[in-house]
Amino acid sequence: MSGAEPDDRWQGLRMASPPDPVALAREREFLEGLSKQPLARRARGYLRMLGPGYMQSAMTLGGGTVSSALFAGAIFGYQLLWVAPIAMALGMVMLTAISWQTLSTGRRPWPAMREHAGPFFAWAWALGALISSIIWQFPQYALASAVLVDLGDLAGLADLSPILTGGLVLVAAVLVSSMYGRSERWVRAYERLLQTLVWGIVVCFAWVVFQTGVTDWDGLFRGFFSFQVPDERNGIAGVTLILSGVSAAVGVNMVFLYPYTLLARGWGREHRELSQFDLMLGMFVPYTIAVSLVVIATANTLHLDPAYESMRLSPVQAAQVLAQGVGPIAGRLVFGIGVLGMAFSSITLQMLTCGFVGVELLNLSVGSWQHRLATWLPVPGVLGCVYWSDMAVWVAVPTNIICGFFLPAAYVGFCLLQRSRAYLGEDRPSGLRGALWFAAMVGVTIFLIVFLGWYIS
Image 1 (tube, rainbow, N blue to C red):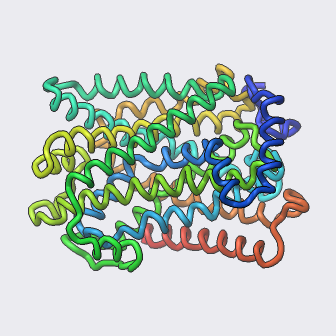
Image 2: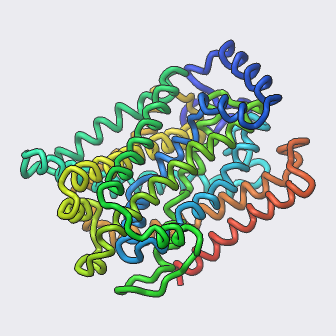
Image 3: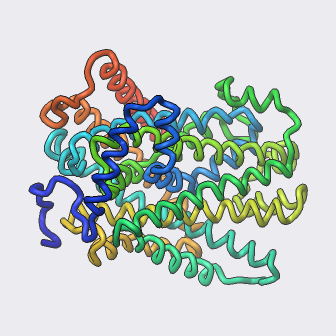
């Protein structure tokens, strides 16, 4: 039925190699017994089962995030350390609701949104995820290629071609992304790889911070809790970097990918509390730590040197500057590897998002060869290693506006689903908790709409 309208007769996620029903039954039985244990014991049990949250963390730790964090630290020091946790907390409000809706019903969210919220919101969500995943491959490849060229130069391989390094990243990304959906074992292997990448990124930036050292601990702690909005400095306003950090934390493609990774795992009602722990420990914690470490590392070095305060440094240039103060190992090698991990993980997950959009729009089975072809839609992004510097001005600005429009539309759709008794039935959150949860969702949506209006104006 490829190319036809999606068939709503199948409710869950159809997979070419679905999870083992016996293993899932044992997992549900384990979770049911765990739910009766104290919180601390439940948390220890959940730690062994994390996965989809790490995929969200790996996806958002990309070129946009590292650039925002680099400028924040280089220009404003520790003042904007509060942005990363607040930005991700805003995203968690909506992602927690999405996991509740998906796991309570077991339905694929795109046809559910089309039916219960309206086709406009469903199509805006899917097209926004597709467009943003394809367009933002260009800067990710440009970043990954530039880092590999710099690391090659450090290793004595001078004048590596950006086309060659970009091609190597493309081959690796295709191989890694093709792991997902082939079987339950490959899904888990892909998730474990991303967990390793995420914590590898954290370790890399932690090592750089250790080497650069922190001299103002009071300023560092104030940066997390003072919620300062610094005035313009050297032509860059603090509010600009705040809004950039917020928009980099959660994108419309992340929102599309997340519920489908839950269904691919075979998760259901018994996994609802696990999914909340997964978002906290797999997404919020590593993302906040990684971004904070980038801000601290650049604040410890670039912010203290007025020669670099107003420069629009790329991550590669930042690594070279860091190397002047802390040596090539902590500067160019470790910082560069961390940035490369961020770019590569985002590339593979954006490919995965396109695959899931294809699942819905073309009625495909996850793990089929048609699904894997759909994951290759962003492959032209490899041209970013050559052309992104020329394309950035006329592609980045309209894409920001378009994708900024799609995300609030998707959020409105999920707000409507949250209040739909026809969709959630008895699982619709009610009482004070339900009212506060819905109010938070509406508040996040309004914030995004206001941000979009400010951006356009």
